[in-house]
Structure formats: structure tokens, C-alpha cells
Amino acid sequence: MKKNEAFLVSTAEGTSIHRTNLGRRILNARGLYALLLVPFVYVVIFNYVPIYGIVMAFKRFAPRTGVLGSPWVGLYNFQRFLGSPNFLNIIRNTLVLSIYGLVAGFPFPVILAICVNHSLRRRLKKFTQSVTFAPTFLSAVIMVTIITQIFGMRTGGVNVLLSTLGFEETNFLASNALFSHIYIWSGIWQGTGSGAVIYISALAAVDPTLHEAAQIDGATLWQRVWHIDLTTIRPIIVIMLILSMGGILGSNLEKIYLMQNSLNITVSEVISTYVYKVGIQSSRPDYSLGTAIGLFQNVVGIILTLIVNKVANVLSGEGMF
Image (cartoon, rainbow, N blue to C red):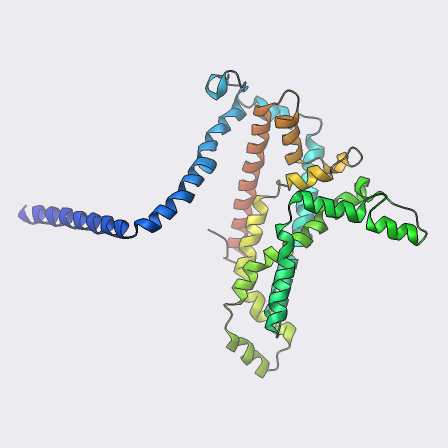
């Protein structure tokens, strides 16, 4: 009995000492914790508090009565979206743009990172990184303005060139067949530099002696890239692919909305633009329907992320969790 009492006393004393030491460490680093408090409060206010608004998806929300006073309608808003005559077209357009962008754009950051990593001139490497990263800072408005200046009907550079050469002008921005290509490839041009940063960082950790040994053994550049570089960054590639699948139903709202017009609406109407029009732009905004669609979009993204992660674990054992 005395041994148990002694053990409890020693445990309590150890816990007390641990708490005291923790308090002293926090007090000594109070400046750092003060800096940490700002992003913590930001995340709580803008990322966690709004989660409560999800209940609007299950209510007939009215601004006059507020979230608490609005009546419950269950899954009615989800049924409205799934039964909408535009549902299949919106889902198809969203999937086409997302899958097209993922398949076409995913390899380019990897290729750029490998090219930069094997560049022998440091100045050329820095210049390439700066030039390719710069378009990332362009806003959607500026990006669409550049696209209009290039593909515009009368003043666009491409049509001016076609007219000069004697060819007929083409309204690229009103073409259903060309909308997805213009949207995706302009996005690839804008995002390749920023997407390559993480792969460049991963390649910097590759042991140079591996390349030296491979060169001594007679390996070509392509063999070294395949067996050393790609093998090293393969876990990063898998993780980025899994994260990309989570946003498969997401789109760049600002860019698509600014590129959208009455002539290409059949291929440019996606979930994001539809939610904006229904939930905000409409003369009678339907906040509940917009919230339900957003919740549907996020749930599907989570499910796809879990599925792809499971497949990655089964095939290569390199999933996120």
C-alpha cells in the first residue's frame, strides 16, 4: 500500500514539474507564441467558425430569421440539385475541365523541375525559375485580359495575324470546341513554375554521388533521370496526385466566370459558376442550395481523395496515410 502511495506521489510531482517546465518554456518563448497566435486566430475565425454554416444546406435559409430560425428541410436542397435539368451538363463540364487539366498539366512541373535540376549554369537555373514562376502572381482578371488580347475577335493578336495572312478570322473565345483548350493550357502556362518548386526542392536532396556512380557505370542522362530522379521524387508525385484528386470537382471560379459568355455557356458552366449564380448573383439568392452544392462538392472530393490514397497504398505503399 505504501509503495502505491509513493508511486502516486512521485507521479504527481513529476506531472507538476513537467507543467512548470512547460510554463517556463512558453514564458521564455512568449514572443514566438505571440507570433503564432495571429495565424491561429485567423484559421479559427475563417476556417473553423464558418463550418457551422453547413447546416444551411439542410434548411430553407432566410436572412430575416437567420440560421437558427430557418426551418429544417432535410435533404431537399440536395434533391433539387441532383434533379436539376442542368445537373448532368454541369457535372460533365466540371469533370472534363478538371480531368483534362490534371492529365495535361501534371507532368509539366515534374519535367521543368528535372530540367532545372540538371542545368549546369547556376544563372540559367535561377533565370528559368524566376521566369516560369512569375505568371503565378497574375490575377484571374489580368490572365483573362491577356487571353482576350491574344484570342480576341478583332483586336486579338492571333486574328490579326490570320487576317494579315489572308485567312478568315475565328472567334476563339466563343467556340465550344476551343474553350477547354484555351482555359487549360493558359492555366498550365501560369501554374507550371509554382508547381515545380516542390519538386525542385525534393530533387535538391538527391545525393550527387548517385549520379556520379551511375555516370561511371555508363548510364545515360535519361537513365539517370528515370532511375534516380524520378525514383526519389515518386512519393512527392503520388502525394501531389492524391491532393489534386481532392479538387477534381473544383474549378477556378474567377477565370472561368470571366471567360464565360452566352456562346460558350454550354461547355463553360461548371459547379463553381453555377453556385455563384444561384447563391449570390441571382435576384433572389438561394443560400441553402448554394451551401448544399458546395457540401456535395467537398464530400465527393474527400471520397475521391480517400479512394486514390487507398489505391496508392495498395500499389506502391506511398499513400499519405
